[in-house]
Image 1 (cartoon, rainbow, N blue to C red):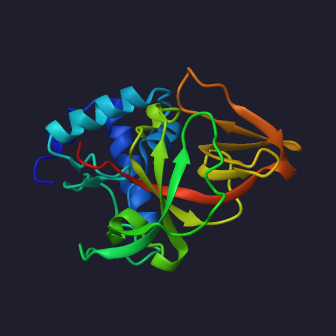
Image 2: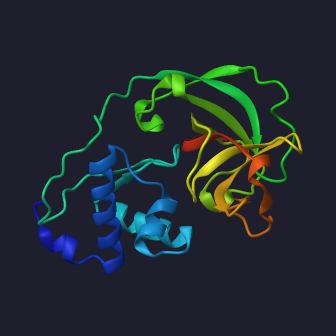
Length: 228
């Protein structure tokens, strides 16, 4: 960065966000989500995270796009920080890839949408949206409902997921509830022998089931917001 005073003029919270993002990208090769930024910098509100990210855009440190959940990149280096080599290869190409779109997932009260697991279509994505997950390990679902609105996922958005059957606490997942024959998009939390599927909207109650009655189908990587 040509003028370190620009960094020094930022608030402590904004400096912490930039430092965390710089470290995260160095480790993973792609940026963190808004929720991850909040958790790691002690900000409880996604709207406060958004406010500070927009301030960093105005200050010329970030670029953002609202088409994907990880649509951020640093455009200025931070002063007095050693470059850390990423453990992952970062592919900067914008070339389009294709993954399977398997229909609808409910972000709200769950509905039986996995009765017929047949790909309805394919959609174009980029390496950036996948976080460098192979296309054979990724799939997409269209969101119905607003229970994840505070995570910036709205009705009609498309979520890109990595196929996996396990999850860590705080992961956003597509979860199949076999006893109910329902699927839902929620944050995953294991609490003893039970699973809590937490919405990101105070108007919706969490779903609590036994661990044997919750099957993780995939973890959310990014979100596409179609033009409306």
